Image (cartoon, rainbow, N blue to C red; front, side):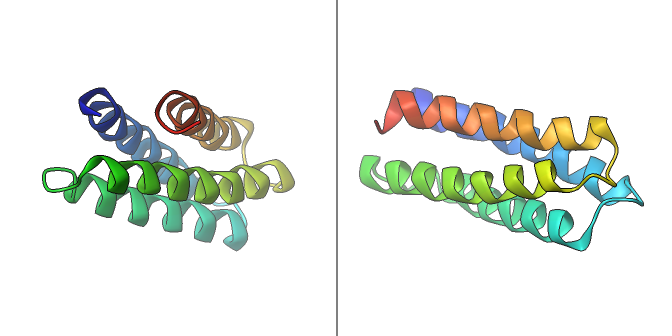
Length: 106
């Protein structure tokens, strides 16, 4: 699970970048903004708790992030007003969350 924990830290950074792009994108919808903020907030809490998290908690956190990532990706794909680069940042973060889920949980 050490690799999963390290991956979660890297993914948290990617989510932070995606969130910054969404916040800076004046054309992004409130739905996209809210979905990415929820993902960012949860990811931050997961990373903050990694030092005391056992393997089961890490797995549950990955599943939860994957679910929130699905919502963020759906919002990005539906938001035709947001810049393509903004939307792609969210989709990329989603991709890495699901790669981790495949390796650590599935």
